[in-house]
Length: 242
Image (cartoon, rainbow, N blue to C red; front, side, top):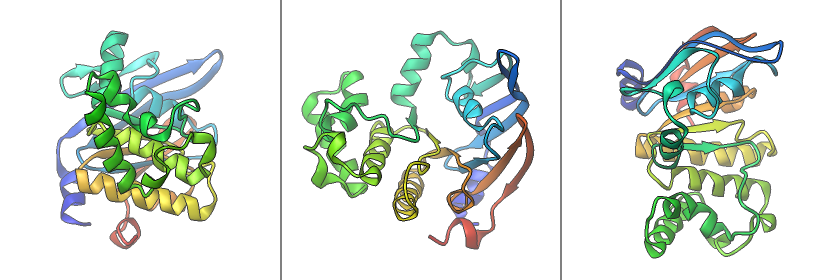
């Protein structure tokens, strides 16, 4: 592993989940899942469809509250926080990217990326300047004035990543970020995400069913029927040779 990857693996966790149980009706999505995330680490969560990957991410990001178990971020227990504080964390310290980007179709790309900053009270000129920097990093600065519907799938997803990182979060939660893309678009998105995360020392929780996408991570956690089946560090030549 690289020095940064070693630090991520050996450091104290910044996010810890213990014994997560979550059911939807009679269907149990998580049944005792536990996982740690360290600063600057890219963690891939893999498993078959229906294994609980997205539910785990939603619990870790404070989007969904588990029925049992706990999620701790620093000195705060996310599953006990009021919704107002959870929303604040997702605006400032957490970034979230979904499979289809979920950009606001009525807004130009620059405003989509700047939105978390604008919601936090950043002056419009400053928010646009920072958004412009991140669009440049992800290679879509030339599309800043376009609406999301005018972008390719890969461009839209890179804009969504720029929005997730524009606030300087400590953690980015990425739920199947390449799932709607072809192999080339997926490779471009993952290369950009991994580079940006390592450059800014941002931790990433990456949900994927694709082994090629998981290979960008430092460590892989495999879920099976809502529980952690296996956790392992990925070989250096796989995880960092991109």
